[in-house]
Amino acid sequence: MLEIEDLKVYFRTNAGIVKAVDDVSFEVRKGENFTIIGESGSGKSVLAQAILRLLPKNAEICGRIIFNGKDLLKLSEKEMRRIRGKEIAWIPQSQTSLNPVLNVGFQCAEPLMEHFRMDKKSAFARIIRIFEFLGIGGNRIREYPHQFSGGMRQRVLVAMGISADPKLIIADEPTKGLDASKRSQIVELFRKIGDKTMLIITHDINFAENLADRIAVMYCGKIVEVSPAKEFFREPLHPYSRGLLDSLPSRGLKPIKGFQPSMINPPKGCRFRERCEFAREICKDEPPLISLNGRFVRCWLYDRGNWD
Ligand SMILES: Nc1ncnc2c1ncn2[C@@H]1O[C@H](COP(=O)(O)OP(=O)(O)OP(=O)(O)O)[C@@H](O)[C@H]1O
Ligand code: SF4
Ligand SMILES: [Mg+2]
Image (spheres, rainbow, N blue to C red):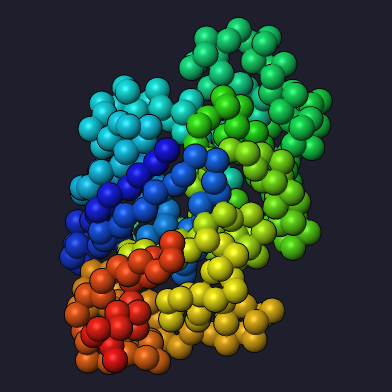
């Protein structure tokens, strides 16, 4: 469905080149929920924006983003507009992306009118059905974003995302800023649309544990582990993945020492080296991506020939 190959996104800034996504490869399979987790600033949102070609002008991007056989990086802006919203839905990180001066029904119906040439009446009828399905209430379509609570605005964004029945949904931090009970409602909401192919980005590891089929862990612009969710939560492979899980209140609340390094001059070799309790001399070289029974990990620990 979606294959990312050797993707790099660099930003030219006055302070230097920010390597926000650096040589990232993974695939999202049809029907699965593929969830990316990782600390703030690790490049998750930039990666999602690269797939949708929504990056600012100072971004330099290379690699391949193959969606249903087409390289999205080679499409014109006009072709890309056809894919955005129709074939790939984007549920953005910020709820402020809703337009404050348009009612929510119109904002959700617009893609249907634009991409499917649906008339206004049929588009609104479909949105009412989706609002009912998502527990928003069909009678609220004429209300404006400020009339909704944070949790409800998030549902509206999900409604907007699924309205055109896209092939792939990309959601960035769908539970951000919500309290625990609202978060569990959003988990239920995503369960309801669980037959869709989804690429989810989240800080919320409980959300990931509840919904993901596979987990990718991103650290300082690199994917360091990709594992089926069950195995990941039973036994994370990468030392950073272990640190992320150990820092959860339910697993001992042990924070990872130190900070994520700068993306302008990241350390050579393994970028986690300065925080890793296992680091050795060899970790000054870039670790290979190692395949282990259907899992992938970028760490020298698993390269038995070089580690023992
Ligand atoms: N337009 C830009 N110009 C320069 N640097 C940028 C730009 N956009 C993002 N970055 C940098 O890219 C890096 C990755 O940012 P990104 O927003 O993808 O992080 P994230 O993993 O989504 O974090 P969070 O979990 O806080 O949302 C950060 O260091 C950020 O400062
Ligand atoms: S490559 Fe070395 S420093 Fe990096 S995570 Fe593995 S053991 Fe730690
Ligand atoms: Mg982000």
